[in-house]
Picture 1 (cartoon, rainbow, N blue to C red):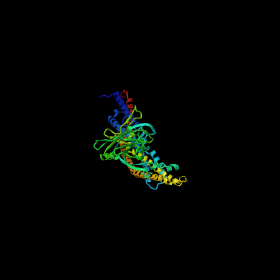
Picture 2: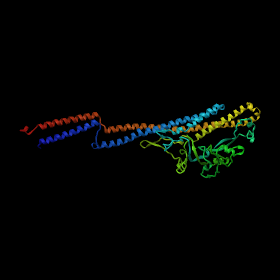
Picture 3: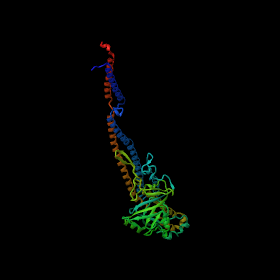
Length: 511
């Protein structure tokens, strides 16, 4: 076969161009340190790269976004639980201090001040938030757990469920001594002699159910229904409603608070449902479940909002009522879990709902303690004042009558002290239970935090592994590129040199 100059030149040009392409490709690799610049160069590398990048993008989302957000939520929850634990522990400490039988009036006043301060802080931790989202309010993260201010015109229709276990015995005292201020009032024993000074102050124990709220609306909005353990309805009488315990006493015999065996009394001011002995006995023996519907208008700052605990309806605007459902038709709680996807096919619930942490009864227990402390302070002040009156000249001729007043006042003070001691003793046990519930929630948060921490370590290792696989698939070592580039450049230079020699030869060289 005859090889012509044109054939040699064409072959040499093709080789030069091929070497240029290699040099250019390696030059791009050197500047980018990537094996390929476009998928068509190596489809296998391209497909594997897409898969690795997609996986790594998911891992980055878990590790850099979801896990830190979940950690922040759990940390906010944990801080709130720690603060709530401190508040409840302080209340329990006041109960322990209160059981001391040698307390002075100053000691009682100190306890009252401390309880008042703690009452204002009681549920404030329930409004804890994470980046502006409240952590205990389920899906309604833009709403607070408590009322932010006094709302006198806000009205809720509330449905509250109880069992026979919620029925407890409580002591009710009748009568109160109004200390006379003049000799004429001292000698006027008409009121005191109405039932004798010994029985002017009376004590009766009745069974009751305490509602979550006090200061409820009038009787037309209150209904009670009950069913035994088998679901059979129990007939209950229409309750008699009194605005206060004082009104209840005024309707009793000789000012004494009394209730018939088959009667139910509701005290609006305290939110108590008092049961006659026969009704209480039937409810307990049948292991009854009780449902009470009532209406409340006006809420104080710091009170828990009912929608986070009960089925209720906000009827403040009668034309546009807002219904809240906490339990389904079968009485099962509707959970509002906030879940974070922290790994492939792994979700973590980061929130606790209010009723899992903050017991509705805490507020009422603290209020009862405060009322009892104040009643004991007032009763003992009456005794002290009457003792002082015995030594005052203007009452020199009234000592016998003062003794009668003093006997009645002393009985009132003894009852008040007795109730206070009972509430303090009961309060220690109650707040132990509240702390136990809080500690269970705290443990749950800690367990979730540990789970999240282990997931974070695993995802971190997985992220590193995926980065290495991605780099191995896409990247090329610079040292390897330099070696290949040098070889390709030398081949290119050699092809140029060979082409130069071919072009110097002509036909005359063969003549």
